[in-house]
Length: 558
Image (tube, rainbow, N blue to C red; front, side, top):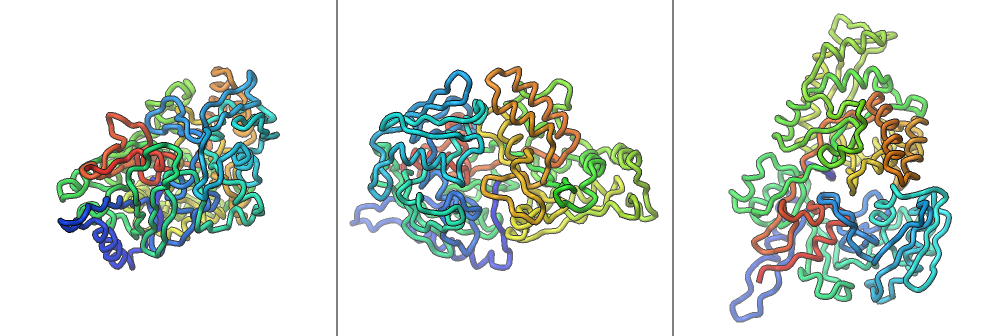
């Protein structure tokens, strides 16, 4: 799951602060007064001190901006599939070759400052220098409700990223901002179309209130949402058990214990996102360390006992991962017939050692392989307080040692973690990959493996770049371009086969598990949540577009 820093030194103080905040808004009204609607208390990953930032282009944006304040044209349901749900867009259509996308927008929508939402806002959002697609040629209005977007190559496969991933921003607020301003501006009083607006921000929490001019009549019914700053999963778990937290997506080793302790009874687990080892893989772009050798990455991959990691670090709640990064059970049609469908579930230290020896490594007296005087010694970092990831890192260290690979597991602050992966100054990181919003692995291949979405080590990745490993493979890049342009499924499958052959061999991200994505929610006082029976949206509180859609559909219990 997506998480934020966990600083244990101040966890107790933060827990006390947010407990008082949460409890303070939930007390019963006096008997002779009209009952006051209950505030919904949420943790979406923010730690204290909270810093106001509602800029969707900023890496430190607060989750309340994404969905509750700003919206996309359509919602693509990552958890349940189905047709895209109209949001600010009413309908769309492609031309025959996939180079022109015609979008019809919703009429009668206003920004939270009272200005009309128009086609000019859509054009700005799709064409500004920060948010535009590299393949974009133009975006023009054909009438007051229609925009025609033209690309230099077919974009069928990019549909979800364009329509469900581009935040709609008010041109009258953003148009005068330079690229630097657009990525660094804190945007403390955001103007959006979403169901909520920002009321206040403190170091301990921030509060959103209902946008009374929201375009969907009668929504939202929950009038106030408070996002709490919590500094560790353990503190969040305590708040859940005490009933002071109504909605969160976080890892809890004993989910049944939440309701048993008196906390929310609503619970769903929707594994969607890969958990991996990021490796700084590309020496040509400045990566340094034994992990830049593909043989070392292959050996680590074979040494890992994923079954044990799932049982001990994720208490059996994670799912099996495919080295192709297609989601098993959902994307099976896109897995090539001549690659392994699943990553190995048991460790094979002998096979790992054989790969190293074939690559010219010899085992030293200390049991660690070396080559040209350099030992296969690596540092694996994870964020302090991420207990599941910390435990997995320790297990990987032990398992690798059996294959003659020395991995030191260490923890760092969230900021150190973020800085290192953005700059490329790391060897191994326990991290996550954002799963795709549709039953197709294309967006992972493009965003996380393409050489167009990375930078040399020492140069920070830009907004929208996710290739932390610095992997750059011309075969993959060409196949990604072919897949993006494909309207024929066989052509796309051929491209995916090329990609999978390369990434399964090269392993810039060493796959571990599909992470447990646990969501806890208070269904005694609020109704309308996604459930196992009706996964109408991706459930966790940090779920970006879906979080706003869920909030708009909740209702307090009378």
